[in-house]
Amino acid sequence: MLNNFPGRRDLLIALAGRTVSIFGDGVALVALTLRLQADGARPYDVGLLLAAGTLPLLLLARPVGRLVDSRDSRHLLVGTGIAEAACTAPLVLVHSVVAVVALVAVLGAAATLAGAAWSGLIPRIVGEEQVGKAVSAQQALYALALVGAPAAGGLLTGTFGAGCPVALDAATFVVITGAAALVRTRRRPAELGLAGGPSRARGGFEVLRSDGVLGPLIVGLAVVVLVVGMLDVVLVFLIRVTFHSSGVWYGGAGAAWTAGIVAGSLGAGRLSDEGARVRATSGGAAAACACLALCAVAPTVWILLPLSILGGVGNGYTAVCFSSLLVTRTPDAERGRVSAAANAAVGSAQGVSLLVGGAVATVLAPRVIYAMAGMLGFAVAGAIALVLAVRSARSSEAHPR
Image (tube, rainbow, N blue to C red; front, side, top):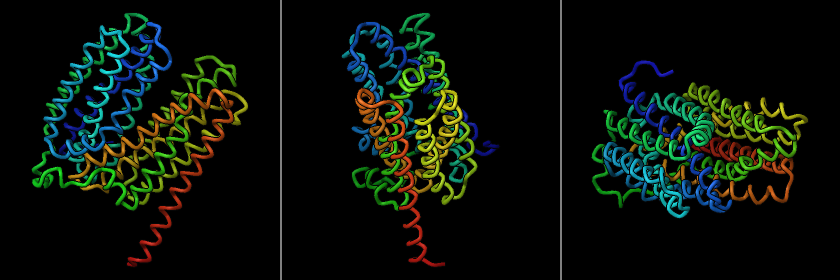
């Protein structure tokens, strides 16, 4: 997909390191969740564990973005990797809920910083013309890593105890630290024109709001995630309660969705025109939500598999095209702040949605939740497309060729 170009070596190192690290995080999260449950933790404690990893996305978006855009990328990534490894090591033995949640929160903050730093560095590695293909390969690899992580985490925990997969995660942080040190490409403040200091720089949310395309997209996608994210909680009830099927179908539906994401990510990498990426972002979201709505009326459980694949394809197109637009429409000097802000908006929407899903599932049937979430998400995706089409038409009238 990405043929020979000057940054190919650095890209391969970066993608390999990041994929290994994401796999390790997924393995460790499963292990820690199982350990808390075995130790008699309440559902609220497990919720705190999951929230601890996502809250930093929102709370630290501004300082993280400014830090990424004002410091040497290699220094940040190597330092963050060392800090992550140091914070993960105690989790091998710690059982206290308070200590585990605190350490996971620190890891979440470090992951937020590392994610924004890598997002700003990748365009430097591949060049502006290859951004779409690089993001496509990145999303596909991450999706594959997240498919295998839960199964590996459960298997390792059941066989060797929770300490083994957590230790594996610590080892993956050593790998990503080494990858950061080996990448030759660097993103330095002096090269970004930030001699005036970060205090004069616009915040990531300000940059997003001022962009006529990114502004509506980030707001709309955050609302879509808020509406449909709860279905991650509801899926198990749809499979087990509504269809009276085994856990195999639950795993199969999740795997089918991820397979669709991989296919959609690879397909989206072929789009190079900005207009096509904009349309694919809203269109992919609409397609994914339409498939979720159709799950509400599925007569048998096996129909969930093709619907999940198609929905995942839409999800993959949306993720890759929006990520590509974030890069191509943002000046290099502001990409760290914009990445942190976008991750905060979508990540916090996902966190809130999961909490809401748990509450809604106690009062509404799974089919009803799927129908409502899917149709609302589809409507929001349609509204995004309409707003952007109107703005594009007005822009064309104001600036005729």
